[in-house]
Image (cartoon, rainbow, N blue to C red; front, side):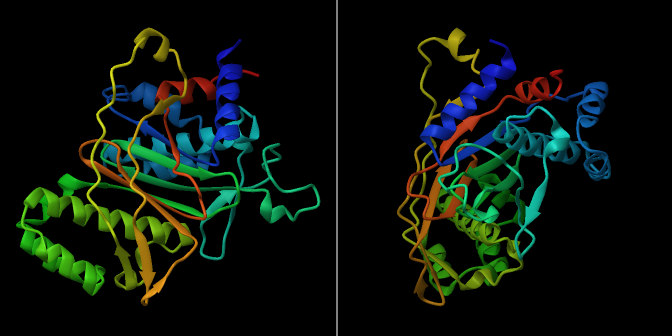
Length: 308
């Protein structure tokens, strides 16, 4: 079985068992001091996307933008069962949020008589500290994701200054809870969780942080803990997997109130991808926590370099 066939088989198996899947890439040193490899990989993308990436001022930003586009088009192409990166077309909701068009997949729960709006892949993207991520839902449920760094809190000076500087983004209940926390690390974690929650919800509805996020009152937010990966029983076999399932501990107790009204059909999931990175996933009636899948960058590049 070719790697392309193996990838498609793994992906289709994931879709059969999970409606919501979080894919992520750890960029690491993949393009470090390798300008030629970066340029070669960049040329895989449509020209318009290339120019946007080249315009980035810093190399790390350009690398993150490239990884983001590669992951987005990789997942969409797998969904379409295609290796043609240019075959991906997007539609947009009323707020400008993209979704995949013309999927023609065979995993939709809708019948052939359903409207074309039900035949789409909903997704959301987020980048943070050398990682890029994509949450997808195959049941036409809107989703949003955000990765947020706990250590970013240190960029804004003393913690009391951090809280006061960002007071305007918090609901008064959230602000009161933050001010009651005495331990520095716990405060940083909760601040980061609130930030990720607000941004992921804003992404779900497609309006970003232009929303009045101070009206978002997230309740029952506990401190998520990083789940140290277990030692693999057979590393040699696991390393051969082109899509690598990851174990995370999701927290699902959080509820959202807007103008004191509970958002009833909203599912909210929090976890830590690393000791520093908090992940928030928000979606409409997702039912189950997302599966988390790590995708090596060389798997993505190899997929698009395959000649049909």
